[in-house]
Image 1 (cartoon, rainbow, N blue to C red):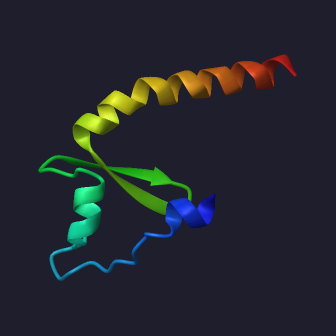
Image 2: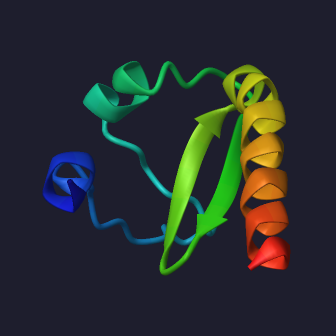
Length: 74
């Protein structure tokens, strides 16, 4: 699964202004527009379209609450 999800990952370096250039095919794949969220995920960063991240957060928080409740019950 990791190979599937991370197979299109790209190493990136900061330019002199501290910016990262994102390849066009990744911009298109992630539907990134002007407003982007940078989300820490372990040893990597994820770039999300701000609207898509806002839509995803409730499901993410619900999943965390469910896992936490199961851990408390164990």
